[in-house]
Image (cartoon, rainbow, N blue to C red):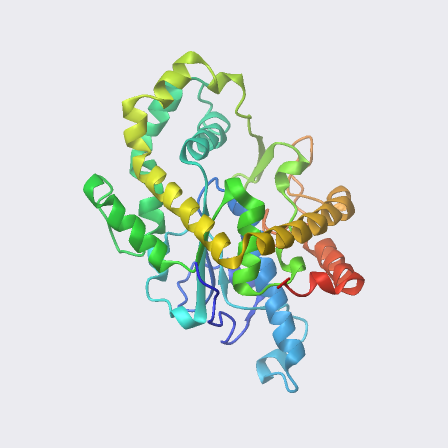
Length: 346
C-alpha cells in the first residue's frame, strides 16, 4: 500500500454525531467494519483520527467558515463511516478525497469467535463441533467467503466461483488504501500511522475486552457474557472438523484474502523500512501503555465488570471510542512531553 497522497478531510466538516449514519459518502475516512476483527477498537480509532484531524484543520484556519461559527458548541469531525456495511456502498468514492480501509483476521479464529459471540452467548447453542458445524451451515449466506463478499466494491460476486478467487482478491487489494491484520495489530497501526502521517495520539484506544468479557447488545440494551475459546474448541472432534475438507472449502475464500493481505502488509513494511516501522511501533506501545495506565481504571464502559448495563458511560457512541476524553488528555500530555509523539521518524 502506498503513502496516501489524497485528502480525506478536504470537504465540509460534520458534527460528531453524523459519523454514525449509514449513508454512502463519496469522501472521508471510510472504514469497512468486518465482524469479529477488532472492529469496535478500529471504529474508535476511525472516530479519533477524524476528530483530531478536524480539530487541527480548524486550528489552522484564520477565519473558520460560517457553519462552524454558528455552532461553536459542536464537536466537528471529518466525514467518516464505521458501521457494519459492505464496501460496495463506497464504490463511487472519490479516491483523492477518501481513504478506504479495513482489517481482516485469521479466518478460523474469526468464525469461532463469531460462533461463541452469537451462537453460544446469544442463541444458547452448545460449545461443540456439531453445533459449530450446524451454525456455519445456517449462516452460509453470510459467512461463506465472507471477506470476498464484504470487502469487494463490486455490486455482486459469485462466492462459489473458486476459479475467480485470485481475480477477486486482486481487485480488493487494488481498491483499498490500506487493509491491516488484527492478528498483527501493532504492525498494522504503525503502518497506518505512516501512510496517513498521523500523530501517535490519533491511534490510542481502550479495549472494552479489558473491562471483562461482557458485550453490550443495543437491541436488547443488555450485557451478555461472551465465552472464551477454551478447551471446548480443542477437542478431537472440533480439530477433525476444522482440518476436514468441508471446513477448508468453507474458508478457502477468506484464506485467500487473508494470505494476500498479509503479503501486502509485509511488502508495505519492506517499502517503508522495517526499522522505521519498528520505531513507530515502539512509540505506539509506550503511548498505549500510558493510556491504559491512566484511563482504564477511571473509564466507565457500557457494561460493568459484573455484567451490569451502564447507560451513562464514557463512550462516544454505544461501545465505540470509550474513554475518549481521558485519551484526549493523555494525547495532549504526550504532545507536551516530547516531540517524538508529534512527528514520524525518518
